[in-house]
Length: 139
Image (cartoon, rainbow, N blue to C red; front, side):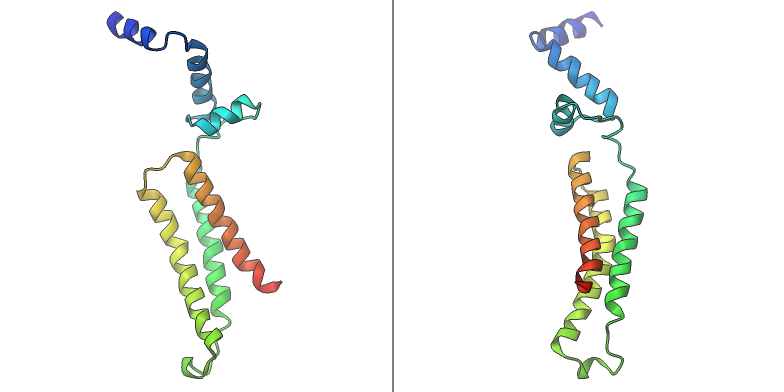
């Protein structure tokens, strides 16, 4: 209605240019955050950047963490836990951690109310740490 339009125009008076850019960022990326606005201002292509394809990314991340856990479990001594060294026993902690992280991080992100930037950053760290878990033992 005209009252709402007048109230909105009064509220954004003097900031029309910023509002126009913010709406453009929202339309291009699918979301609006201050980091998407900074990326747009710096000339980056932000088309679709606010939309996360979480199902695919989470499936890849879970797979990587499960591979980490399976790789760590192959290092168990087959003679029994009592005859293993302290380092071999700590490997159990590594295996349990891998399997917990594989499912706990996506569930936690699903239940939390964080924005797309925070979620994308967390998933990125989650992937990198799984890759490090696979690569570091070979270094």
